[in-house]
Length: 175
Image 1: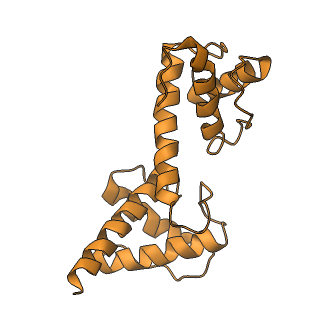
Image 2: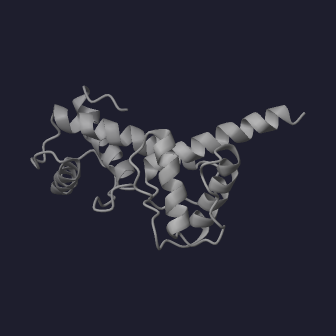
């Protein structure tokens, strides 16, 4: 996170955070970091405040900075989780989604179902249907997440982390 006690750099820090958050908050536009607290910066801040359920004051008060830090840290963790993938994961993934991210999710769930016998492996079709949603819901229960059957950033982070840890463990025992 950025040091916001230095007023000269506080606006740049705010803008950098908002820029990062624009990747994961669809209503938040991305704007250049210029260090000027303009109407654009104020409007972006108000969009974030609305998103976070805070009063839409356009002022970066302590509660707003706390909310920004929480979401910023999660967004950065999500980006770290995506490293090594040939594409970013579009969230949420839910019933009706199609394409490469769904293929990847279904393949990963298939591997995890070998470990968690209660989680059925969905067919790897690239179409997010009821079987995929059911398997995701069971994994969410296992990870202590809300059982929505849809893949949000937190769900993907848990699935990816579990899969990565198990893959590394199996590679280290395949000597």
